[in-house]
Image (tube, rainbow, N blue to C red; front, side, top):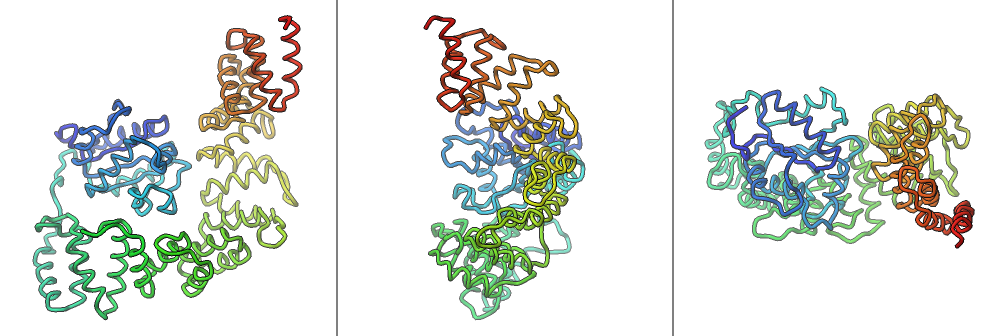
Length: 532
């Protein structure tokens, strides 16, 4: 380990202090520490108050900023109503400090596909390459992660202040040469100089490894105003800068971002894709269905999967399912997500009017996507095997296999149904596994899993009346009439709690008022006993 002070560690680990994020961050810190990396990780921070200066200093002094995206963490970042969110403050400090940010996606977490799902100040997040780890991460993604680190594991931090140390390339001489040619009107040199400033090869006041957007924008606008084909690529970068609000001296503007993407689109597929996305989401422009359709038809290319998928998703969201399938059909490569999307169209029968589900076709696409690692597809295929529809046949063994794939990746409904299968013995009866999966789903707020646990914890194989009472309380609080009734029973008999017939009567009454008839029987029993 290098001899840094606590706020000068090379790697800063940012995480939400919930069970999954905390445990994952602890394991990651331990492994990195054992390999000789310098890591800032403090699980004992009091996160109940304002964002402290010591964390700002730690982020400022780091080289790599690692963002652990658990479900709770991403939900917190996407919310707009949190007064103080330390992870958000840490991330913004890293972004504004131009740190090397590495998002890590935990099981069941997907990066928002659209920046509009995030608060405006975090709109950059979906554009940062992320690494996916399983909960019990394997060496392969860990190796992939460490390969992206700018920090070194020699423990001596030999390269802490090193940048642009390529002895075969003289940055200052290159930039001076480019600027001389640019001043003379050479458009290519203007663009290359802008790139050096934009990509942080040369920063303000000649500082190496720092962004200088002012100089970048100056030269990019020169290129944009020229007749050279380089103008399309300059417009593409200007569009990005206006989108992020990073043009010095000018306010953030989606309208200008859209304008520059439109200008760049004829020669820049990235801008064309962004133009389509902004049009269909009405960002920086007015929504016009016919214009959107015409745009995609004029820009479709079977080698551009991103553009084709955007168009197919737009058609799907607009109810044009048959047209969406036609677009999917011409794709050169169909990713697991695309196979899942097609499966959903067939599952819902949206390929014809009136809708007519085709579960055989849906199963074909779901299974292909599941076998290639798509969690939601594994759930859908497992669900079809467990509860077949149409001509698709029941297969409990396949149901167990695919539901387990989804459940072990964090899919809540898959955890519930898998628990139900182990409880009922559809393949093999295993109360221990049933409890395990019901508990996982319950922890994510699945109320039906809570009621199943309230029953299971009263069985001899896993007897724990106190846990039964706690689970019944959760189910009742979620508004389940059966949960109210079971809670009433536990209060009536004094199982896992002190017997309280008045409270039991209250729960029975709530269950009855919510349509659970047996609550009335028990209410009358208590009233007879108490003489009410």
